[in-house]
Every structure is written in structure tokens, then in C-alpha cells.
Length: 473
Figure (cartoon, rainbow, N blue to C red):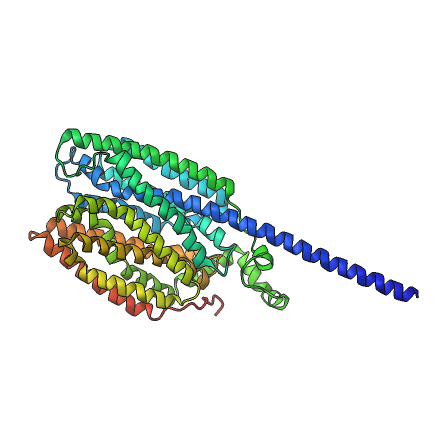
């Protein structure tokens, strides 16, 4: 009898323990999901702050208009350099964010990022020299590089199997809001009277620059607000929680034991440096670097020249004002599409689609100069391709090189985009200011060259795949 009673008690205790374990698991999983959603909100706010910096690109022609008061030799082509210089600095220094995150933590790195941006915008408020502006844009690029990937990496680590979808959501909300920021900045701060920046009138240009200074103050305040919201909601993920409670790949006990040495290596800073070095000097990384470098000339030429081209060919001012907002909206549509399919279709297939669109756009772009609607459509194609590419490339890098090494390795590989941008802009600027013939010939030549580079990028992308890089062979 006693033996039967003891067995019954043990059985009841076992069920109670299982119920408690199940309850504990559900509570922990619920807490984990809440943390993931808060991190997603944090990343969206942080991204919105950075997107607001890029919306200033629509004000470049107004800045150049004022700078000509101090240097009459300036042309609108000097404005080509402002954001390419920032993107060049951003791409080359993007691995700084990963280093600082390891050294001082994510929150301090985010705060430092915003501090650098606010300081550079504050100095630009008093600037009167275009070349000094270039230096400040380098500082802007470094500021963005410090924090741009930290919150993205954090939120993607909560949703390991849906990284493209998460990247799409991260871009979607700020993309729509930045479209409205473009309209608001243009309509209510920069150019309330909707006058052309080409008017050569000292009073008008002075007024435009005063409005530009107001925009800088607005941007500083906006960055401060988004920074504090981000810091208040930023949650660092625990990799063990991802395995046990999250949406990532499960790791069973046997694999955990077999991979014990690998886990120890991941926690070893020296080992991490060796792994990064091995990945960067691998032929695959070199091919990816060249693939991205040759992918971007068309996007860079269109992004950095559409406004001066529109002014030169007298594209309807109404269309020029709409392009900035439409660019962001089309980018959002692209983000949604590729967020939904990015985790389901191989990177190589999606990349092929982008390159075909780029090649077609490049070879036909010069035809659009005489047609307002065709001109707008060409720029929208570029927005669609650029935003779609940005959705799928980061999850691809995370998948190939792993979350621990993504910022550093991905930063080096994606620096090719910034190098390409500054190189292509220097090339366009040299042709436009030194060729004695017509600008029509220059623009035609530029887009023919970029179409050829797209085709070469296509040939390199054929060899790309989603297999994880093997650090141990």
C-alpha cells in the first residue's frame, strides 16, 4: 500500500513539475516576445532619425544657391558631392559601430552617434563655405556609422527566421514618415513660395539660406528626441534566450555539446578578430565587394544628379517637388514586397531582378530628359531597386557570416557602395565641368557606362548563394 501511495505522489508531483515548467516556459516566451517588439519599436524610431538626415538631400540645391553668393564659380554640380561624401564616410567607418558596441555597449554608442550628428549640424548652421560643408558631411557619415546597424542587429537577433521581414518593417514606417517630412520641409520651412532655386536674386537666396538654417535647427531637435526614445526602449538580446524562447533555429543538447569549442571561440575576442580577417580576405568576400561596387553606379548617378538634370532640362517644377516624396513612398512599397518574399527566395534570384531593372533604367534614362512623366518613372525604378536591395542584403550578410560578425564584415563589404558613390560622382563632376561639348553628351555617356557596370555586376551575382561561410576550413 505504502509503495502504491508513494508512486501516486511521485506521479502527481511529476505532473505538477511539468505544469510549472510549461507555465514558466510560456511566461518567459511572452516576456521575450514583448522585449522583441519593444526592440523593433526602438529600431524604427532610431531609423526614422537617420532617415530624416537623408531628407536634407532635397535641400542641396538651395544650399548651393546661397553658396554662390560667396563663390560665383560654383555650379549645381558641386552639390553632387555633399551626400556622396557622407555615404562614403559612412560606408568606410560602419565597422566602428561594431567595435564601439563591444567596447562601450550599444546605448553609449547610439548616444555618441547622435551627439556627433548634432555637433556637425550645429557647426553647419554657421558655415558659409561649400568645402567646409564637405568636411562636416564626413563627420555626419561617421556619426551615422557609429549607430546605424546596432539597433537593426539587436532586433533581428530576436527574429532570426524573419530577418528580411523585420528589415522591411524597419524601413517601411520611417520611409512613409520621411516622405511626409520631405513635403513638410519643402513646403513649410525651405521654400514656402515654391520658387525656383535658380533665381539669381541676392535677397531671395539669402532668404532661402535662412530657411535652410531653420531646417538645421529642426533636424537637431528631431535627432535629440529620437535618440532619447531609442535609448529608453533599446533592449539588448541574450543569444541563449533566442535559442530557447525565440524564433531562431533550435539547438539540441547534442549539438550544443559538439559545438562547445565553437561557442568558446565566439566569446573569445582574439578568435573573433581572426574569423573576421579570414572572412574578409576570402575570395567570396572580394567577389561580393566587387558585385556591390559595380551594382551602384546607376543608382548613384540618378540619386545625385536628378535635381540638377531636372533644372537643366527644365522639367516641370511640380514634378521635381513631388519626386522626393514619391521616392520615399515607392521605397516603402519596395520594402513591403521584398520584406515578404526576402526570406523565401534566394538572394541570387532577387539580385538578378534588381540588376536587370538597373541595366534597363541606365540605358534608357537619357531618353527621359525630354519627358516629365518618363523622367519621374525612371527615378521611381531606382528607388524601388535601391530599397529592395537594402532589405535583402543585410539579412543575407547576417545569414552568411553570422550575427556576431555581421557589423564588421558586412561593413567592410558594403563599403564598396560608398567608394563607388564617391568615385562615380567625381567622374560625373569632372565630365560636366571639363568637357567642352554639351551636357547632353556627358549625361548620355555617364548612363551608358553605368549600364555596362550593371551587366558586369550581374555576371558576378550568378556565383552568389545563401550558404553560411565556413570559418573552420
